[in-house]
Length: 274
Image 1 (spheres, rainbow, N blue to C red):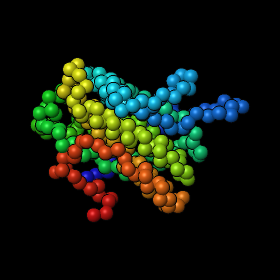
Image 2: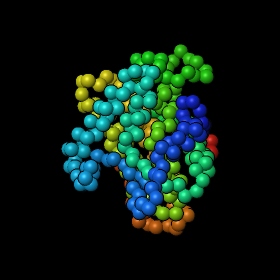
Image 3: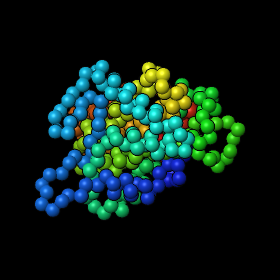
């Protein structure tokens, strides 16, 4: 398995730069307050416009997850715009107000390097089938360098594309090298897992087509794999750089996913120990 490379269908240095610029907080002169740099809108609670805190029980959390994934399904009807609209909707999970501590250009280059350490293609989930791939129109696939008569998981645009939230997570991790922010980063990973469960359980409604559910599931599954690997790498880096603390191990107990891997696809990137 090859490592992820910058490209038209994955990520680019220019796109990382634009995401950083859009997510950077510009403090006004004399201001003493700055918003949180990295905040995830999870299903468990939310703050209203007046700052009020609202917590939700398990049933309400499940309803919120269904609502969000139904909205995602509504974004993928048009093959030409599905990726743009889906990523925009998914991006609402995060509210970022970064405050870079050094030159932004160096941060962009480091983020691209970190992303390039990820596997090129996320592993396929067990329930995907040739029939589902063949039921999709050509616009949902990138143009393959080596065309084949069979539709391929790795050629799906929602699989190849590195979401805005994964890039934001990468930037957040790189801007937090000497403190512990595992809780806020973990919340994103666990929230994606919850949404993945919502779209996998098959009870969203009759309005969502099987093709839409498959595309959203593939997108979330790919984002979960990448964010999970980035998070676990962050946890190890913190333990090595600022010293081992047993209590941080609690954050490694990520929410389990109900989605199973297609075992025949399991491969190791070339840079990993064998």
